[in-house]
Length: 127
Image 1 (tube, rainbow, N blue to C red):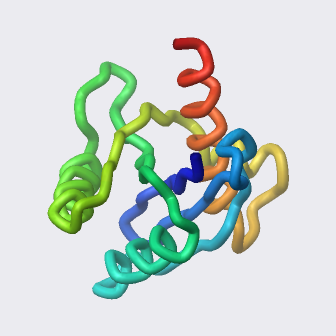
Image 2 (cartoon, rainbow, N blue to C red):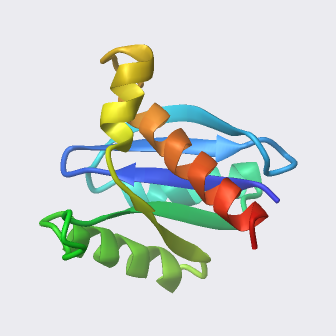
């Protein structure tokens, strides 16, 4: 089952997707977080035939929502209104980890999305 993951940020959104089997996460793109984001995500979902979109759930260390969490919830609801299955998956330090692995470059947020997706896939395999 093909999946898409988003590392949702104030200015940019990292995008990753799986291979056809749904077992390998690949960084795809970094898009500006603008008025075209919803349309781009829906187009990618349709083009890829993705069954679900995973969005990194951003929280503080004490598990309380942080400032971006409200925007993530709003975007999740917009996708669901379009009939998209969306799941939040905890993410912490994915951007830091992506920078550690590859350095800081234009695909860092996409790599962070791939880390979210990889972790999601691993947690599903254990259920």
